[in-house]
Image (cartoon, rainbow, N blue to C red; front, side, top):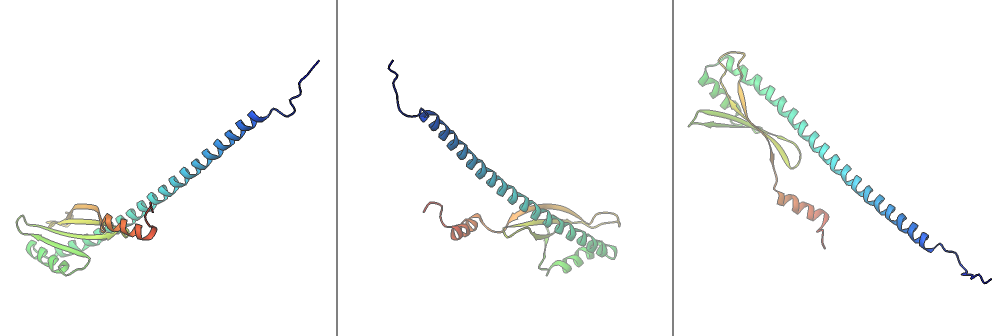
Length: 168
C-alpha cells in the first residue's frame, strides 16, 4: 500500500567510484609518460656519449697507426741511441704530443690527447721501444684513459648560471 518514493536516482556511489577510477588512470598515465620521457632522454644522452667516445677512439687509433709508421721509418735508418734522439727532436716542440724522457729507468714516453667532448679527453700514453727487427713493435700502450678537462664545480656553476637554482 504505501510505497515510498525517494525521488531521485541512486547513482551517487557508482559515479564517485567511476570518477575515482578515471582519476587514478589519468594519474598513472601521466606518471608513465613522464617516466618514459626521462628514460628516453637518458638513453639518448648515453648513446650520444658512447658515440663521442668511439669517435675519439677511432681518431686515437688513426694517430697510433700514423705514429707506428713514423717510428718504423726512424728505426730503419738509425742505431738505438740515434733513434731515440731523432724521435725526441721530432716530438720535443710538438703541440699535439708530449715527449718525456725518464733518465732513472730509461723509459721514454709519448702522450697525446684526443678530444671526446667539451668536458672529456682521451689520454693515450705510449712507452717507446726500439725495434731490433722490422716486424717488432715500436711502442707499448701504457695508458688509454678518459680524463676530465674541467672540474665538476665548473660544470655545476655553468648549469646554475644557465638554469638557475632548483629551490628559489
